[in-house]
Length: 244
Image (cartoon, rainbow, N blue to C red; front, top):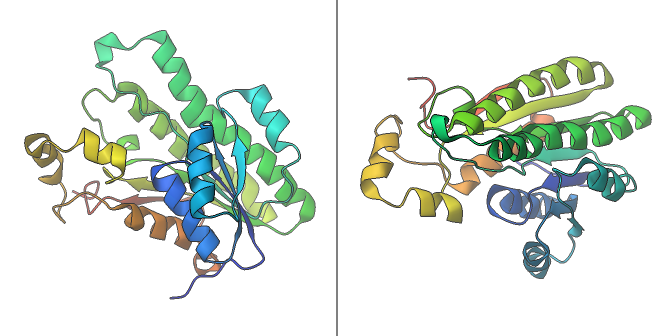
């Protein structure tokens, strides 16, 4: 099944590393004009060395005013991938106000704000569009030390559904992908211990963690016209973890 995004313009947040970076590169290979946003200039510089056609945007999306200033003149966007996230891990009894605030600002408020900016343009042009929020299996399953992270991803899933409801009449589709542990550099660092990894993989029927490409392929499908009647779904990319 060939997917093309020729004559489409895409914005990917958190494009400097991991899933966001791989998604930005994949969209460019599929013919899209890609805008890659991240808060770390060094990551953008590295991304541009790999794919010079990507337009870089350096901004901390948890800063509402800074995001407005940078994205107000971004131009038309047909496809949005809200990927930027803050992976806060603290035991419930040790959660701090600062950790709570930065997590919700990055994982919930920022995708809402970026989607508002993009969707207003989509509505004004009358051309529709597709938005994918990168969520997690943690939105639907309690995980130790993930109290705040689980809460933010649960909020993001419900935000996805409300966006789908309210933006659907303008032919703007909104869906989320909900991966298990993904073998990004961060994923390998956090789950390299075989004993710790077994506590999770033993609950995954396929017996393994997700590779970055597994998640990117799901994102590309949801962005594309191949999923033209798919709206408001939370798509697990978890090898069956949530089903069991």
